[in-house]
Image (tube, rainbow, N blue to C red; front, side, top):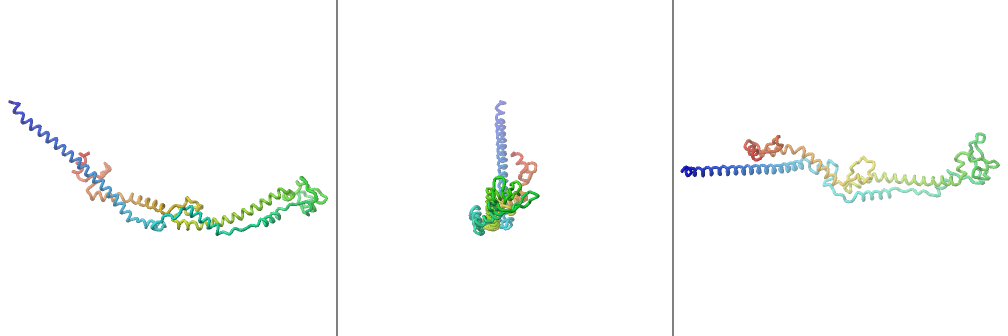
Amino acid sequence: MCTLVMIPYLHIFFCLNLIVLWTCAVRADASEQSSQDWRQRRTELLQLVEAAVKQQIEEDLPAAQLAGELGLPYPVPKPSRSSEEVLAEVREQARHSVSRPERDLAVLSQEAERLYPLFKVGDQVTLRTNLPANPVVSGIIYQISSTRVQLGHRWLLYQDLVEEHRIALDEPRTMQRRQTYVAQQLRLSEGEVQEQQLQIMQRLLPVKMREAGYICLDPQSKDLLAVSLWQPMEKYFQTALENARAEAAVRLRPSVEKRIFSENGFRYYEDRKEWRPAGIRHRLKSFFAD
């Protein structure tokens, strides 16, 4: 009898437990959904922040303004040809702009013979010596050997002559000095031509490079002819624009982020280092959702 009486109560108790469990499950689902909702909203707000920052930067720092500050035309042109081609054109123009002096080899040879004479048998010469008693000796050369020379009726040792006149009696050494002189004069002439060409190239290259769409990374460099110094204006400008806008974004983002999140009911929690919905109710939901 007692058991029969308890059965309805057991049913009631069982039903109450089911209701409690269902309510907890519904609340858990609701809490989870609420958490997902505000987190999704936070993601959307962050996207709005990035868009707002980008728009503000583009308004504050337009591309045309930066190009002007960098001394570049706008729109910034693409290179019309390679920097190597520009350099080759400037070299050719400089080469045609400088007249190359023609040094007559016959004339240079005559100069060399005058500067470095060669004494031969039969020549009337005046030789300087290292002998205090006879510092200067004149006469006709009658004989030349490997160690001495006969001047008139007198023999002089090479070692008693000054270096210049010892060489003048040595044909191989004299010819070598003449050849060296001619080669040096030719190199000097070529060096003068190259120096003039270099000056013309250094004057023309910046103009031609700019016309072709390039900018010099180091205008003060002494080696403007180095191709590595020249960069396409387009690349130079794009790098400068990205850097300038990135720096501006770092400065601007905190204030824009704070404005947008605050306007949408969010608050920044230092302990969590993140934006969350403001208010006790939302905080409790966030707490239990976690």
